[in-house]
Amino acid sequence: MDPYITLLTGLGLVILGIAWLPMLLRGLPLSLPIFCVLLGLGLFIAPGVNSDPDFVAQSTFIERITELVVIIALLGAGLKLDRPVGWRRWRTTWLLLAVTMPLSIAGIALIGVWTLGLSLPAAILLGAVLAPTDPVLASDIQVGPPRSGGEDEIRFSLTSEAGLNDGLAFPFTHLAIAMAAASAAGSAGPGWWTVEWLLDDVLWKLAAGVAVGWAVGRFLGFLVFRLPDQARIADTREGLAALGITLVSYGVTELVHGYGFLAVFVAATTLRHTERSHDFNESLHTFSEQIEKLLMMVVLVLFGGAIAGGLLSALTWQAVVAGLAFLFVVRPVAGLIGLAGTHMPLSERAVIGFFGIRGIGSFYYLAYAVNHTELAEQELLWAVTGFVVAVSILVHGVSVTPVMNRLEARWRRRDPRRVGTGANPDGVSVRSPLHEPEDEVEAGKDERVGTAERLL
Image (cartoon, rainbow, N blue to C red; front, side, top):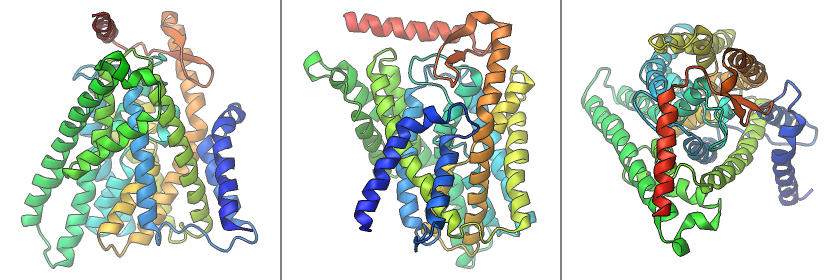
């Protein structure tokens, strides 16, 4: 068979699957990511297939394709958040970022050293790779499209965390790279590289990501919503603009050596804040979601093929135990600790901790690191990461719908007035009883101001 024609046929089947499979799998204990991984596994173990995807050898390609999936997912995450940014309104997000994520990285690194015998740079890298909640595969437990309702505290926390922690994992990734380079050069302890890492990889790149993301979001918000009618991008209803917004915000930030992942999410939330109630936000989100799903399915089919080709061959029983501990002990415990100061019920804090889903972002960080430094343990790192992502896809994919349905049934019994139309699998969404009234007042105020500005 002509490989080119085979590729086109396969791509067509993937695109059709985006529209058809979610409806087909709705009543089954099977998610779209699970199906894609199984499909890739089946395709590449079939007779006559002579080559398999190799994430270790093809790490440059994996870095680029996963990079594209993640930045598009970050745009969608920022656009669909209805709640305005604020210290109090986003309190759970700040706690997850400031407490839960560093604790997760530290816990994973310690287990990596004690259980797997990793060097300190490799252990820190593994922590940075596995700590972030994935903005792509966690979409099933995120909030729905813009203005769809159902922005309960659990979905909001996981969506906003996934949007920001991908950028915040980068300093730890660069720390591991810098430590590995220093160790290779014979420098065992802190030195000038530590100061350079702190000033450049932490302070400058984080600040640049936030500042450039905000500036690009404001500028694009003016182009999209504030120009006269004949020149306003929003009036075109072209969802394709979402891809342009993503690439511009990411590219400009990377050109000034900032964290592009962080900038894309900040730009998306800033753009949404410019005109929160405009229908064009939904057009942008819909297009970005479709592109995200297409690329996600491609990556996960390749992931299934990589498993068939031996990605997990370096896995030991110690690595299996460590991987399960990462998912079912480190993240849940770190989540409970981080949210201990809130007034959320224990069950909701436990759900947020448990559903810190690992996925495509983990592949990106690991591919980025191995492409920028030499690590003797890279095959083991790929095996552990692949195992953790596979287990996360399976366990979280099967459990997310029944867990959230049970919580929503409890919220209905507690406060029936908070039931509304949303994007949940059963057609109903609920605001958490913890959703503060002043949040609704602020959101309503923003919408009234936007309406008044349009009239003027």
